[in-house]
Length: 280
Image: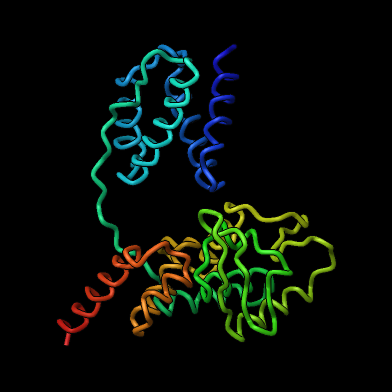
């Protein structure tokens, strides 16, 4: 069996252990990047080869500690499967050290940036609806692209998230404005595709497709900062915490497993409050 066939088979086996398609796609991407960097046969790869690749990513590609962490997790999963299937005698990733992770403050968007983006997108019903749903529900991109039209409960003004992180489902509310833009967009549709948001080719969106839409309108609006879909999620959660919303309810709304996940938002909120106070 040649190297490429073995890599494909091992990646396929690894995917059985993860419920998230995002995780599977990310791991596969970094595993393939490693083998592009290191042309050796799988059984010849050493820990030093992996360390060289990680150093290359950090020093030449500018990868953060968090991304390096994901790369290590991907290779650990890959070589553990190789070891189990006796493709390698010694697991070269077994004793890799995890990088120390810096605590990142969630980057929310200010009101003026959101206003400019919505102004840039207002004449495009589908894209206006996408921005409104991301901003006012705080759902993940992977959740957005999996919503079906039938998952929108119009009378209740709610959306059923059937495929959340870890395949957990939940219900999120939508505002009257959000409902308006969704109905305005759907009035332009003349197809039988069950997905709520589809491309111009009547295909369901990919995560990359949503990213491109946001980037396109940011450029049109002259927004210089790095705006990506997940920042709408940060923005909503931060807004709710700043307004004193119950953290248990915010965790339930956003699909966080526990309250600990929200501590970074609460800390960021207190830091911002202190900064504003010091300016007085």
